[in-house]
Image (tube, rainbow, N blue to C red; front, side):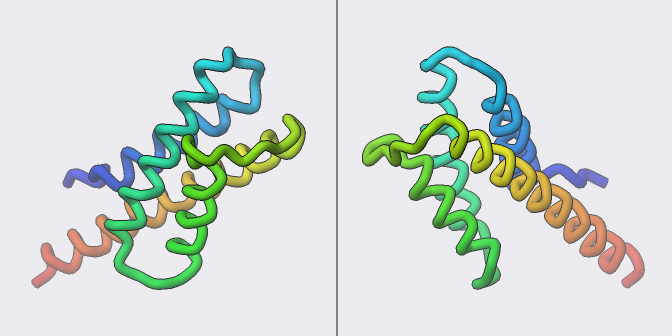
Length: 110
């Protein structure tokens, strides 16, 4: 059983990178983070089948981490957003793994 698909891996990587962003890092890290999170948000949005909170979250994250039209916020605000987004991406990871496991169990039982 392969529970980690591309959706799970990218959302998990996003969660880890966002939590790491709470600590002092070089400017280059935050530039990379913007591009990575923006790209992952677009990809996960395209893979998301449900219209709801998941897609709304991905749109908001995509706008906030947009590397072209940057949203300028104070460091304290970014820390809160990074933590919230990191926890949310972790939640997407867990939900994706549970969905995959349930789908595999249904296929196995049939």
